[in-house]
Length: 459
Image (tube, rainbow, N blue to C red):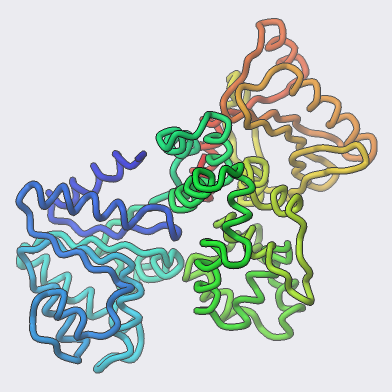
């Protein structure tokens, strides 16, 4: 579902015999997309070889997949593979395959393998060979190997980023599995556009009768399906990398904070976590960078783990900080590094700056979904997901902003109401919104901000 445009792009590249590298987070649907494209091409009479990089454990495996006699030589395996000019070559999780081949003669480093792959693809293109289509979840590795002039795969591939499915698509997916609208909407909210998580939550809801939120917590609790999945992922990491992920999940996301807790230079561990797509680095200034976990379900699992020195977080706190529309919206605000100018749902101009701090306020009579702090100024946001927002949300925003300004001594520069599915407002209420200078955002404006920040969260 929701991948028609991506399929069209891939098929167009195949027609032109150009090479494509597809990248995105784990579970976002890259493998399913490749399988769908393969089926289309095979039905058109094309020859296609689809290789799962995770299943290749030695050069001999490459030869077996090609139907040839196995040889334990990485260079020969690569050359033989890309000399299949009459086949469209698809390699899913190609970065894993490169790491495997780097352990065998004559290579020693992944960069050496990547450079040799480049030479073979250049030769293949010169012979008029069919397209090579790669995919990877190692977002940082993709960027490092393709986006700089001297990168080993620079200019050999067109990049295609696969982001999360839209909330609407996940909602439709849940409806197709016979969930009612309320539960389908809840699945869309907590899956954050990830079809793998959505599928797991839907299965758990159907089999157990739990609500989607309860189903998710069962999945991330010990021995739940997602607990097994994430535990296997963590087992593949070094102890320092695991600890850093727990720190970032709990809000210690600046370099000096991580360094102080780790008692050593975290740079190499942070770099590997970035390359594997587990962390994303947001540069707020020359000396100010923050790290975030894009996969919010993974973050919820991390928070659900009881770490002796860090403690365990309550379910309510996990939901507020990591799951749901409000948490995703705050994450998007944190990703803003330069001023973003847009028009709201009423055509009013709104400029959102890089905030020094983004937080929510709850307790003591407060329930403010998001505050973006500059110095002595603040943006106050009211966030609504469950259907079209009515005028009572406008009134709630006004009250919250007034109280925040009074209690914290900050000037409220902007009051912004965010309603993913739009508004139900009369003409006189819209006029009052304009008179108060309140800005209204919907899914359309959020997608614009998402595109500009390159922080894709399912909007």
